[in-house]
Amino acid sequence: MFQKNNYLETNTIKHYLLTICILLLMVAPSYSLEFQDKEQDYTEYSGVVVDEESNKKLVFASLAVGNSNISTITNAEGEFLLKVPSEMKEGTVIVSFLGYQQKIIPLNTLKKRNNRITLLPSTIRLSEINVTLPKDAKSMVKKALAKRRENNLNQQALMTAFYRETIKKRRKNVSLAEAIVTLYKEPYTSGKRDKIKLYKARKNTDYTKLDTLALKLQGGPFNPLYVDLMKYPDYIFSNDAIDMYRFSFGPSTTINDQPVYVVNFKQRDEIGEPLYYGKLFIDSKSLALTSAIYNLNVENKDLASALFVKKKPSDVRVYPMNAAYRVDYRQKDGKWYYGYGNVQLSFKVNRRRKLFNSVYSLSSEMAVTDWKLNLNEGLKNKERLRPSVIISDETSGFSDPEFWGAYNVIEPEKSIESAIKKIQRQLKRLGSSSGQ
Image (cartoon, rainbow, N blue to C red):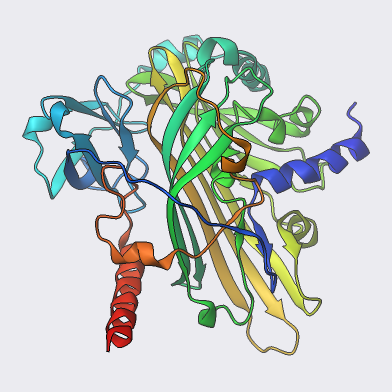
């Protein structure tokens, strides 16, 4: 029997580390930076990944350059942008997506623009996978968590990653931040926390559209990093907390043409505190976690709100409407490592004596685009990004179309692309007026 009071006391801290906090009418410490650009000759390839049968765009499909650690993912509209060093132009691109057959494409057959890559849904030999299906889904999850040493990258690594955060009021973008960061990834069996160094960033916020509520995302790249369940299992499935969930098997699927178990989980009916529900995707042979998609239960508005809102004015009430999380892992030489993390939150903000409420959507995502083993490269304390960071406005970065250079980024979907163009027009007007 778990100790309920102790669990709730520590679980509040774990929620805070895992989620994005809102600061209302607060001036918080921000982070500025200096950088040197990465000069490298490269070739860009862009296009879309779709289902070959239905033409449905595939969101978060992975594109990896063969015989390297360079990779990217498709955006929310199935579009991608992949930058490949010029000396690798004779290589291949491996395209994969959960539940689909993997496709290997020679780079020299790709166009620079408007590529259309199709994937076929996988057909699973159900008779084979069902024979080995364990009877107890909970035991399988425990085994998957216990096999981190065997299945996950157990060496220090330096990972280059692209980070993006957005705030929308209704459907309008009111804040956009993007950054290139270096992840100092600790071994999966180590108790040490991963560290982050901010390399290059740009940010713009339209405070005139925030109804005088200065919403800021606290935590920056740490938010999607902490959804790495295999590195931070105690945020959800600690030894005590795992007994608060019910586990069951769903229909099996595939990843990289290999059968994958699907485990559904949700909090037990007698548990009243906000916990999680979702799906875990576990490799049928190694029992490695390949992906996880889950949500926080926000039915109890007051309890859920207390987990997110750091500070606010007394006449404001903030309720989470949705809290969704995703983590995807990639495999190299038999070891799985963190590849992509995503946090999606939406809130309703009510203000006393105001007729209409406001709805805000907050998004935070990060994709690893390259990595190497860390051969004793340290990080100075002054260079470390803090988990409480709020990225500061660096508007000038939007004026340069080549701002990211050779670094791979997640292709912006149309609403974000439109926001960037609007910022660029504003900067151009400001530059013209100041030059007169």
